[in-house]
Image (cartoon, rainbow, N blue to C red; front, side, top):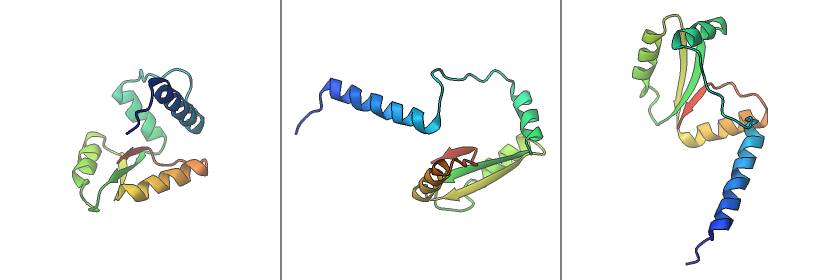
Length: 109
């Protein structure tokens, strides 16, 4: 078994990070959210009040409790929740990125 040297590992990691940044267009520093949850809630309502989220799983209604908790905590908001196998959601995310049309807000695979 051949072990990869530390410099090679660092080079691979740096290359992966650069590719990741080029794909998602992140800035050089992390953005820190400073708004309160109430301010974020009000802003979300102004944007239409719908959050689209995908969960990896194999039962369509396995995340119903998450949807109920979200919509109870944030009245008027709608959680558009989809549960599907991660391998299919991965492909859908890749397609959205390739088309420069990402519409899903959150993903939990």
